[in-house]
Image 1 (cartoon, one colour):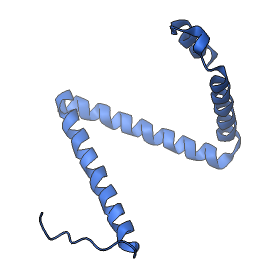
Image 2 (image 1 turned 120 degrees about the horizontal axis):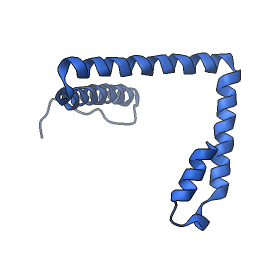
Image 3 (image 1 turned 30 degrees about the horizontal axis):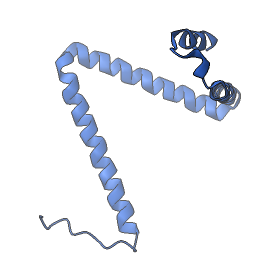
Amino acid sequence: MAGLLALAWLASENRRAIPWRAVATGMALLIGLAALFLKIEFLKNAFMKLNDLLLVLIVVLIIVVILRGPKTLPQIGRMFGQGVREARDEINKVGADDDPAEPARDETKSA
């Protein structure tokens, strides 16, 4: 981390304007979270499972690129985004149905 900070400082145009308090706070937060993830077994296991999941996603993406070609990646991204949007909309609908203060919307009418 110190090397990255030194590199950022060297590449900076105005070296006197660096907010050192924010840098120190960020470093302290980084070290504190790293200690939590390494010492608390539950957080360590959750972090390792997330790491494994990301590794699987990367491998699947590489396999898709090899089998389908790189030109299909935007299409796959659009399909994934559409699925996430639909899921979010459904979650919002369920949350809106639970709120009695809001009047129910009629989805069958077209504008």
